[in-house]
Length: 133
Length: 136
Image (cartoon, rainbow over all chains, first blue to last red; front, side):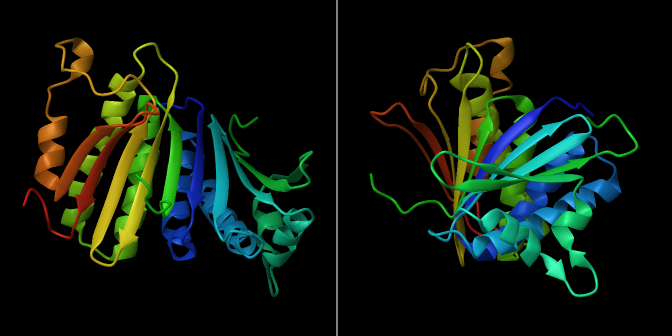
């Protein structure tokens, strides 16, 4: 298994395709990053939850996702989102009795604001027991 | 040619490691369509070959990106692999050229296969699949 860095940009313009496509692309990226199975699963669930919430905020109905993978870590960036939407996406991923799925499953999340006024939500999932950055 | 925006679009660096992501994206679409294992495997092979072509031949000096676009309809899946590399060139025997099975495989598996280069320098390999189809 090689673990070179990988980056990718994904656009999904049909919401009904999001689950099938995102799940597989995230899994492939996490596997390439040598994430253990539990973290791969966390990456899939967190990405899916964020994508569902983010799709409600996308003006044109399309979902834009960027991926970066490196040994022991995967970063998923969702956006551009309208100003203020990234934090709402995290909040809207809440499940009763569990809390905000995104917040619970990722190691770090952040909002990257741009000069244009929009923003993106960045989720980082790392191998907690391995060589993750 | 004006065509509707792709339903799904994945842009990747033109390196061999990226092909697995393209393959998984397309497998996700085949899953969505509910097509069988045989179709899934065949389509994966054809898309892998198209992507590998872009990786091996589009950018001889390295670097560059390619994009896999897909349109999903109830009874067919259209996949286009696009790059902005050197365009379609005659096959030259070299270690990087492979066995030359890519095109025959794409033709055998796809129902329609087309190759084009436009005035903006975009080269496209476009394959249309139906469940259990291939070659016509």
